[in-house]
Length: 285
Image 1 (tube, helix red, strand yellow):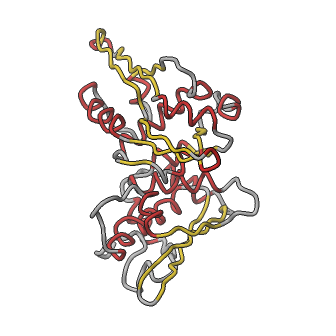
Image 2 (cartoon, one colour):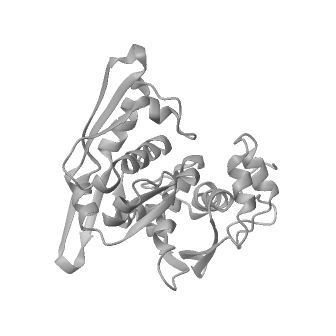
Image 3 (cartoon, helix red, strand yellow):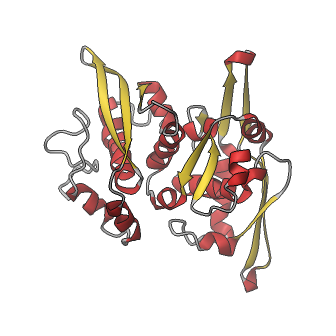
């Protein structure tokens, strides 16, 4: 919480508890817009996110965020419903206990003065989230500009996870089992059950988008036993030249996917064949 408090006035970064950012224990992962809304709520709360207090934000301020939809009081309701259904499963092996809780206690949208544009969004974080945030000794610092420019839920969840690992000394990669990686990207049940579909539609596009819009570059290596993929090792490295990133973030989002394909971002085989574009699209860009 001290790290979050120290950065309360830095509007370019958001501090997240690493346990939330890593997402390994998030069930019923929300949609892209709901994840961005929750990110904005954490940023708004800052160093007070672990306190049992009401947090407020105005709809007009939310609308100014590039990358958020032009929300109304009606369009916010399903997003809060998604956040209310999301669960955190917090395992503490050293204390020999695990807990289950929600993101939110409750949220309110007051539109008494809607005609003047003064709509107030209020919420209380869930007890589980507050305890986790208050006890956390690890954190992720996310670039808000990158976060709100990402166009995929898979990209947001993977970006959060990697951002929580990049500050660790001498750690530049992590090996995930396939179930762990599916959990990180919020892919559950029978969704994209074939590994080839999972990599083509979720993992490969997420890596390509993060490489285009973030301050580090990801590469992925598949580990197999026989013909079966058993794990994926993801490595990251900071970009030496930040100018292409700054230029891309200032450019219009229209055509960004095409530029991503044309940049020929490399993802180690077998995630992309010689004929598959690195953005994950089946058709030529």
